[in-house]
Each structure stands twice: as C-alpha cells, then as structure tokens.
Length: 228
Image (cartoon, rainbow, N blue to C red; front, side, top):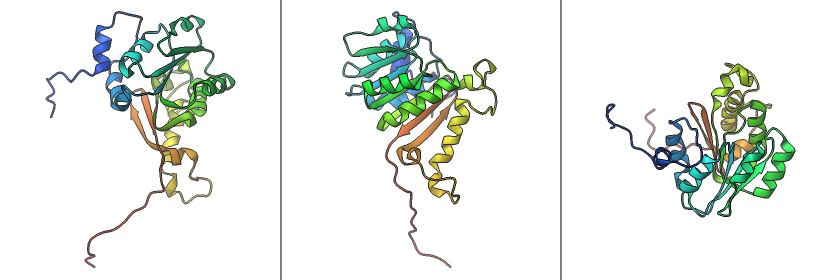
C-alpha cells in the first residue's frame, strides 16, 4: 500500500519530462501515469504511433525517447511550421485540418495500420469526432486510441457544456452502450463493429482511452451443486 505522504513512483515519461531541455512540451502531469499504463507494452517494439497536435514539437521528441528507435512516429498539425519537426529517424509530420475527413482519409491511407494514436489536436468536438471516425477503424487489434484534454467538452468556448450534445465526452458516453450491445433486447440497439472490436474503455480526468481487440459474444456458465 502506498502511504499518502510518500511520493509516488516517477514513470519514464515524467522522468524524461523533468529533465527535458529541448523543444517545448506542455502536459498535465497526471497524464504521464495514464500514458505509461496503456503504452508501456509497446516500448522498444516495431510500432506505428500517430499524434494529432504537434505544436512546438517537444512531444514528438518525448514519444521517440519513450517508444524507441524502431517506432514509426507520425505527427499531424494544422500549423505549417510543424512540418520542420519531421526527421530521418522515422518521424513524419503531415499538415492539414483534422476536421476535414478527406484530409484524414488521405493521411490514414499513407500511414496504414496504427498501434497507438494520441489525439491532442484542435480540441474542438467536430475535430475530435472526425478523427475518431476515420482513424479508430485503422487502429490494430491490441492497439490503443487515446484522446486527451477532454475538459474542453465542458468549456463553452469550445462548444462544450455539461451534457451538451455533440461534444466528444457525450459521444464517448454513447460508446459505452455499444460495449454492452450484446445484451440488447431492442431492435434499434444492435451489436456493431465497435462492439466486436473494442475490449474496453477507460475514463480519466480529461482523457478517454479505447483498447482495441477482437471481442467474442460473451457467455456464462455455472459450476458446483445446486442446493434447491
């Protein structure tokens, strides 16, 4: 048991962040634990990583250090200046508007299957939902789609608000029903591709994580001797 007065373990991402003196990185500190919980199994592997929201390019450096030299890392941003953060070590940057599904489909075709997607782009609901709709089917079984900074779902300046239709948070809440669609007894609530390919969803402060994987219809069994 961790005692409340003892400092929590610092994970590799936070260690890197505290020592970093390169390009600018801006992160909520509690994100590091969430990242490491869902991403650690991909470290050192031959994987494809996609990050929406490049900004000053520091997070691309962070992911390279974390995932290692075998990772192919793709950054997407609307700011043309971000294109300079591509390199010869396997990092590519695409420039465009993530609310534009034609653009998203074009880069998705160029990237191919994805192992980890981090959505930290424009933070507007139409951008977040379009990115999910285009890229989630392209995340491999066993892969992860993580969307962050979802506090904007509650901010009026981002067309947000508590229970406001159209925000990504309300969109994600609807997906929790799809996880349970196997048990539906309604004609208009059927098992979907999402039901069959999503193992779990994890809700955190400002983050939702979707874990992909093939899901078989659930079944139940009984063992032991009945007593009546």
